[in-house]
Length: 212
Image 1 (cartoon, rainbow, N blue to C red):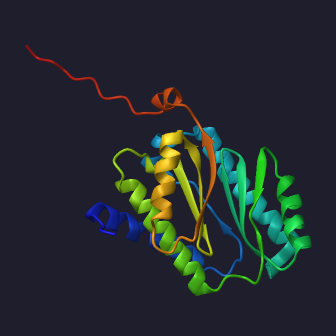
Image 2: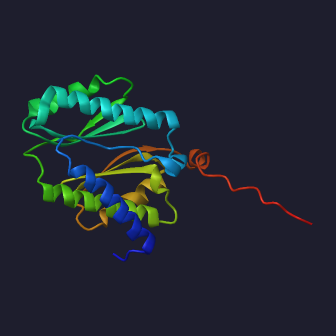
Image 3: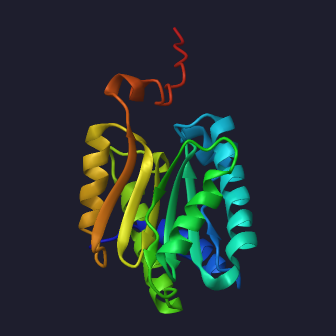
């Protein structure tokens, strides 16, 4: 795949940020919201973005308190829909994680994609981080997609797409993810909106001053 300068810069930034989280000792990785200027293009309200961040923090704390370090759980919330990825040793722990997270205030639904397996190795997590970075960079580089409308999570080669997008955007992003080297499977955890709804999220052009 050919990378443009913008894509390479984005990939390096994303990989650096996510790799920093991998160096921590805590087994729970929290998917954060992107702040700053990117917030303006997010299709959630600012309140929903803050609520998602709070849900991730509260859920991570509860999982840690109840199951300790015997599980490796990634918690990602988008518009109060929670995606659970990672590894747990048995079916009982998988169900327990879901029960604990379900008690977090203000969340709507849970998509439990936890695998019953040993914790992923550091090399596997690094590979997943790199894959996620490549997909995000490709979304940024796509001329007809708003990259910040998506959250991308990769776990052992399976990529999960979250966001509020049109069917057209969902299909395009899915094709990008599927064509990315290292991706074994793509799972869509998307809220589909109409093209009319999308127009309400598009930035309006600045007024042009006409001098005569």
